[in-house]
Structures are given as structure tokens and as C-alpha cells.
Length: 421
Ligand SMILES: Cc1ncc(COP(=O)(O)O)c(C=O)c1O
Image 1: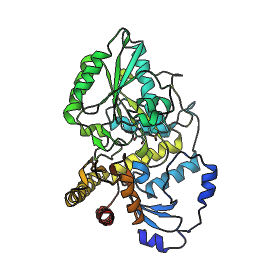
Image 2: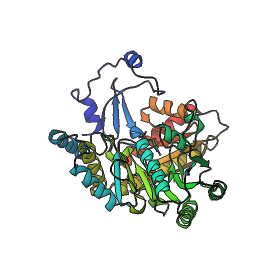
Image 3: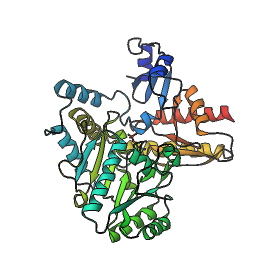
Image 4: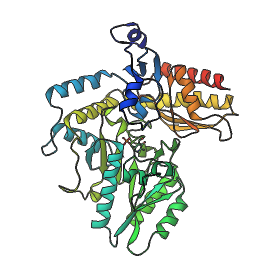
């Protein structure tokens, strides 16, 4: 069904009234929300409760891999909820097993732990690193995990500590011990930290990084940096952990973000796009560092039949519909259009950067324009985009976005920028 058909079909858009005051009275105020509420979606299009139509280049922040209302996902979740949606991990869950098999056969990992979100997947990775360091590494009473400045790893206590941005940590002290921050893409800083932290029974157990920093401003990892990191880890036994929560599951144009930088991690995490918007998280590990045993880590919902079936459908659909090629082609098309805009408004913008369908456009520091200004103005004109920090506009559409939709998004963005200068 085309967006026009849906919009013109009164049975599909109800224009129900939405009581924002009611919402604000009862929901904790943890988000700076835009003043709209979505009611319906199809493909890359959304309609709000007023019936206004938007082209969705946010996709639930890099989560709705197959867009909205994809027939394969609808069929799977409908069938699965009719059959069985949840049982405990006290029993074998065949759907979880099938999903883990697919991931292992299509990645560098040997096994998978399932949970419900990116933060939880990273928590699992942090716990695995700590258990490995205490049970396998010698003289390691106080293991340290190096993470990058400007990184983002989640909102639990351990993951805000891992996150190298003080604004997420403020007022939540005391933070977790055992983390140390280094500038991203700076190999000298890693080498110095490893030497400096090598004291008594405290040393670096793992380096945990995003292959491309998402929330930190859409900054791709440098090839040479990651090659040298891998070499350091091989020589020292330090574990290399990648947070693929935002960049994984096809978003980069490859199935996993690490394929763009030519090195394999020992442990990596996934969530967001894995089940296309059904909550799931996963932590993958190579067998040599999988020291988890019964009782060491668990999750009530993790890998339940419903979420597992949804994720398997997302992954199989990526494969069956050759979605990675679409991501590469549409990403190239989008970057070309955005780069033309950077040239046209060279007084406003620094550059465009990204992989596949995770791209950022950076606004000059000294210009009186923020990413939120652009996001708000684009929303008025019917295009949803997201900020990645105060000066970077982020484009993360569903991976099924069409060539026409990329052109339309570029047109709206250009009109938006015209209206702001
Ligand atoms: C790289 C990265 N890691 C972790 C997270 C946290 O994921 P969640 O919000 O599912 O806990 C995010 C969320 O934006 C992310 O981008």
C-alpha cells in the first residue's frame, strides 16, 4: 500500500485526539519530547494523531530495520503470539536456538546471550570481561576497561560509567570503578593507558568501543587504528569488545559494523535493529572468552519465543531481500545529496560522514545553528531526522528506504535549510 493510499483511507488513519497533558501528568519526565504523537506507520512513512504525514529518517533511532508494518514481521509475530509468546529460560526455547545459530553462522562469534536492550547487552559484556579477567587472566584483581571519550553505551549504572560523556553521569555518582577513557581513533592514547594502568594487581582487561560512534556524532572508526588495536589485544591478551548496538544488523551496509574496519572483536553486542523494533538485546562471544556458566548471568525475558522469532525474521529478510545492497546504494545516494548541500551551504556545514544508512552532517561550531533547530524545522516540513549531539544531524532511515524516498528526504532537507538561512 502506498503512503497516499493509507492516508486517503479513513479506515487506516483514525485521527484520534491525543491528550498531551494527560501523558505529562502520568509519565515520568525523562525525555525532551517533540510535540507530536505517532499513530500509524507504513514502510518509511509515519502519521501523527493529527493525520500529518512524515518521512521517517529516524526509524525509532536506528531500530525499525524493515520500516513500519513489514509483512514478514507482521506474519511472524502474529503466528508466534498465537502459538507461544513467553516461557522461562528454565526450558529450551527453540526459536532462541535458531536465532543464535543464524547469528553464529553469520558472524565471528561462537555463542550468544540474549537480553532485552543495548544497555543490558553491554552489561552482559562487562560482566563477561570481569569474570574472564578474574578467572583466566593472571594478577587481575582490579580489571580496567578502556572506553572512548564521546562514546555511548547505555543508561544503566555500569553503562553510563562506560560511556565517555560526563553529562550522562552527572548526579549519579558514585560511578562504577574499573573504567578509563581514551580519545577515539587515537592509538597512542591506548598504548599510554595500558602502560600507565599496569600497576600491582590493576591492569587493562578489555577495550570496549563502537566501530562507529553513533550518539557521539556519527564518527566512523579509523581502519589503521582498529588494526593496531587488534594487534595490541592479540599480543597482550586484552579483550576487544565492540558495541554494535546502533551500527550492527545491516545499518552500516555490512551485516556487522566490524566488517567495515577489517578486524574481528572477541565480544560484541547488538540490540536496536536486531528485531526491527521488538525489544531484544544480544551479547556475542568467541568461545575462548565465554566463561559464563549456569547461574552466572540471566534475564527473564531474554530471547523469549516472541522476540527471537521476530529477530530471526528480520535477519532472514535482510538476507532474502538483499537489503545490504540497498543500504549501500541508498547510503551512497544520500551522502552524495548531503555533500552537495554541504558545498552549497559551505558557511554552515563542516562535512558529511557515515557508513551505509547511518550518516551525520556536522554544523560548524561558530555558526548560530544547532542540530535541534534543523530537526524541528524539518519536522514542520514532514521529515523526521535526529540530532547526534548539538551540532550533528543524524540520518538513520529504515534499511528498506527507496531511491525516491532518499530524494524526497534530500529535497525536504534542502527546503528546510533554505528556510533557516
Ligand atoms: C552504541 C549504543 N550502545 C548502547 C545503547 C543503549 O541501548 P538501549 O537504549 O537499547 O539500552 C545505544 C543507544 O542509543 C547505543 O547507540
